[in-house]
Amino acid sequence: MDLTVDAWGHASWGSRALRAALGRAGVTTAKREGDHRTPAGSFPMRQLLYRPDRLTPPGTRLPRRALTPRDGWCDAPDDPRYNQLVELPYPASHEALWRDDEIYDLIIPLGYNDDPVVPGRGSAIFLHVARPDWSGTEGCVALARADLLAVLAEADSGSRVVVRD
Image 1 (cartoon, rainbow, N blue to C red):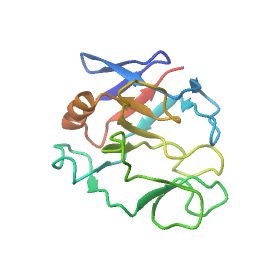
Image 2: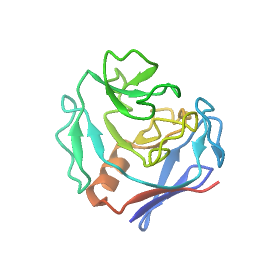
Image 3: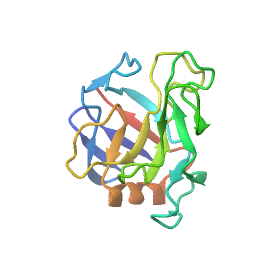
Image 4: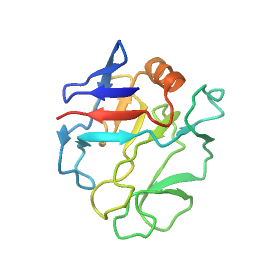
């Protein structure tokens, strides 16, 4: 089953209507690193990363991995590990995945710019928990925690996030 999202933040998972937060600069078909836009397209859900200190392992058919405080994601286009999970400390620019807020308690890296990776085309495009105020993301798709858990419960290796512009 696919999670389908339009540029206005209307989402659907099967027959369920959901709300989504998208990139604070909108949706684009020409994603670039740091543009604060969510890429348009159809992207596989790669795996679930979750905070084991804040929740029990969520039920899902996706591969899952518990996060640690040493997990990060490289966002330096000139680095060989660009758009990949890295262990912190890491010498190049990166995003820490173990955050004080709750938006990365559940992270599903999407299959965007990863097969192959193209430097500068954007990194760290995730499906994650929305902020309480529903403010825009850096380029990810975000759902309410309860909705994300419901999606995870039914998601499998064929599930995708489809973003329409």
